Length: 280
Ligand code: UP6
Image 1 (cartoon, rainbow, N blue to C red):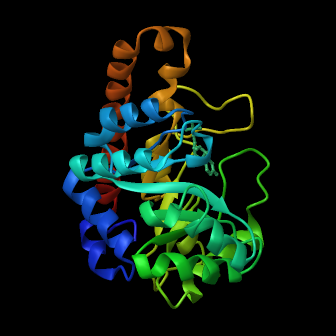
Image 2 (cartoon, rainbow, N blue to C red):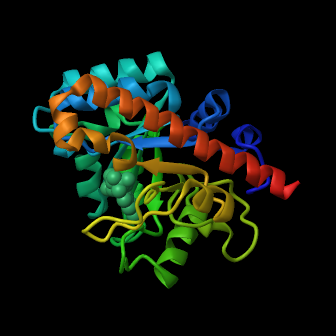
């Protein structure tokens, strides 16, 4: 799979969201997903606006936004259309099917109504996939399974990772369209008959980690060396907003966010081009 271009993989996608994502990546020449982990509406929208032209996907943690309302998702959806990116709510569902189905479709956030892609742990077993599919499939949404995590000491390894891959292969509906993983988990034991996506967090160009167990690798390590499809970058892009200078001067800070966005976009795409070249 790592030899194939993103564009050539569109036709092998059973899932509408995955198809649209690969098309977007090819069109925008971007394999960058920005993770906008900020706690207020205006910063979230400002970052989405600033990096919008450079990303294929915007990732949210909608439950950390203190002034959340449906106007936020309407505005984010408008930006996604204007700048041609998709939306991924990083909800990391982890309960029984019936509960996740409600958490996904109802409550304050109504995630299924606006998020093209979401993700889940397989800890409860495959019923979690069926529960989420009930709400997401009719809307053409996609699901990623957390097969591996970036944090130190993560228990997502060995047989657990293999079970996630198997569950994705066994999913008949096409609702499962890929993984959160650190490596090409779908091809760990040879070629995979399904074309699945690998999205990878824990990406940074300037630091190796944080004080809470996060571990960073470079876009080149992730995309070229490990064969992953999409880099997910959070603080590497919006981190300036968390500094005293960033809080004091929003205009300069947003310019910096924009700069970092194009820097990571280029690094991710260069790594992809090198991987395609390497393979030919
Ligand atoms: N994330 C990880 N590692 C995982 C899964 N998800 O870091 O294994 C998410 C975090 C955060 C983002 O919840 O939203 O990716 C990474 O942010 P950062 O680049 O600021 O570290």
